[in-house]
Image (cartoon, rainbow, N blue to C red):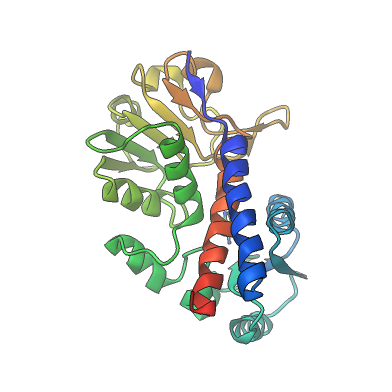
Length: 284
Ligand code: GUN
């Protein structure tokens, strides 16, 4: 039986720490960290994520601005908004929720965000910092995974880590963070041959694909730590990850549930980055 990694509780503890730091920043310097979130279109999952981000800002005492724009918004209008937010003194962090509707150039927009306000760490300058290991901002979801490992006393040093999924948001930066902590890292993707065999080698198995039931018990080494970044709906419409929990849980030593695993961590890492940005902007 695996031990469940409680992302909700671990995220709650991080948020509590952040709230305390915000409170003393306000008292001592009169500074309140500010986050601007831009949501375009009506993707229901994105709407939920953005709402959760707004709620989390409130919980820790941040100032936040939400920009909910229709699909008909133009690239130019979005670029103008980014320029405005770049200059706004009360905004320390800017986040454009992905994915953007078709026809909008996501990359061009992210590249306009001032790197010192890029709390998602998606700007090429920040991606470069992640490669080099001298972080300004940590990529939120991979940083959340690292925090879960740390909270569970799992040290990646010398371990075989296998990541399934090579996205810019999760897979690639995840590999870097694990590498910086001296894991031996393999990244698998849709063209990987013998996925099951590669996964069986993993001491730490991280999956971020978006495919229900992708990882089954026979693919998992006994005692492996299994981290599920997937957020999917099963046939009954219930939220689930990439991991077939029923068959994997008996083999793993630690496992994250979906929901309540990685998801809550992503938001607390975003708050952490926004706090770091506020510190940077206030010269602390
Ligand atoms: N869409 C899914 N995950 C993320 C994230 O971490 N940041 C942004 N901006 N969009 C996302």
